Amino acid sequence: MSIDFSNLPELPLDDLTYAVDLFDGFDHSTEPTSISAAHDFGQASSGHQAPLEPLEGSIPEVSTSAGRLTTSDNRQHLNKLAQKRFRERQRVRASTLEAQLDQISTQLRELQDVQTRLQTRNILLEKLVELNKQAGPPSGPSVLPDNATVTDLYRSRGFKAVPDPLLAMTRNVSALSLTVRRDVAQLIPVQDVGKLSLREFAKIYTAYTHQMAACLAEDSGDSSPAMRRLQQLTDECWTLIVIIGLTHVSGVKDLQDCNMGEGVACPDAKQPEFYCAIMATMQHSDPQIQDLLYLRQLFYGKLGQLARERTALLSHMTCYKIDESHVSDKVTQLTQWSEQLRENAAEEHQSYKQFSSAFYRGIHTSKQLAVAQVCGFPWLPAVNKMLEAEAVRRGEPPMRTLLEDTTLDDLENAANWAEVATYLTTITVQDLNLYVPLIQRQG
Image (cartoon, rainbow, N blue to C red; front, side):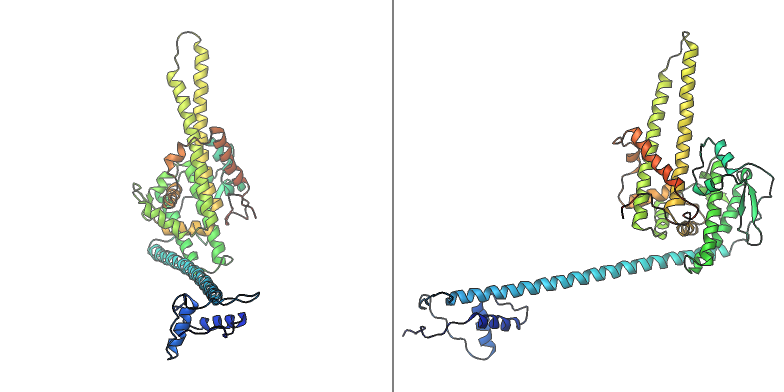
């Protein structure tokens, strides 16, 4: 028995679109792979048995005139529309999930920042309790008359200029004013700072750290009286440290090896984790981290340049033969090489001071320095070890690699380091307590 399909009407395109809209009402997890499958699903769900599909080859081909489609074309068109709707839903769902992921990631970063701030504040409060148990303000040395200024002190150490921005602004001052004792300002002549014993300095340092912890514990905003007092304390304490580094025989090393709570020198056995923890409490911004790593690169490039120059001079002096002929000329040559060695050592010492000044006075704020001092107590954190710990954590090249890097010639290394010297001259008294970018960024 044959079935006559010739009288069946063609399904208009509007009805096809309506049919696709009906399909979209089904659960998204049950996506029809074809229109015939969707039709069978609809029949089964309505309780009626789906009609049997005719055998292959039994459906006569419907004539195709202009603007009319065959049954096969109708199905293909419906399939394409259904697939298009499905892909569109998938895109919308993917966009929604991406937006939710971005929102959750932002919330996670904010929570991590809050956690870091709370951990830092907890450390500060613990240090404040510890400092409260110790003795009060130091007695300090007596005031002795002396007319030596900061400039005189630097010149006596072979410096042509004062690298520290704050001391450069007070280069004609002959005495430091310490206000760690609130009742009276204590004047210490510049020349006498180097005469402070380790125990005397430890007492002063402990008193400053105690007051810094109290200011940080208030946490009342950058423009509050506590923060202004914190800036003053930080400037005074680090100025004292810089001058001691110039006047002491062993520089700052004895201070870094000193237990400030007891005033006793101990070998520096602190692990890298100690310095990583301090850097974490300082809560650097991304531009600050970039500046610190750039400063590290320039610094070790400069030290590598000076080391190569020093090696070449020593090689010349070792291989130089002095005989009886032209003795005076050869002595003159040796004298010149010795003077160059002396200048090389002075330049290296100055580079260390410039490096420390850029680290403390430019890239960091007063609040960050105070946090590092309080969290590191009873130790004075070494700037180079703090920076090395951060570099290792971020996968930067090791110090030895930067020292031996010959990608740039020595003239280029010297020119790059001159950028740091210029940077220090741009720091004004208004910038001392703020972050001053080292890398000039566009916009």
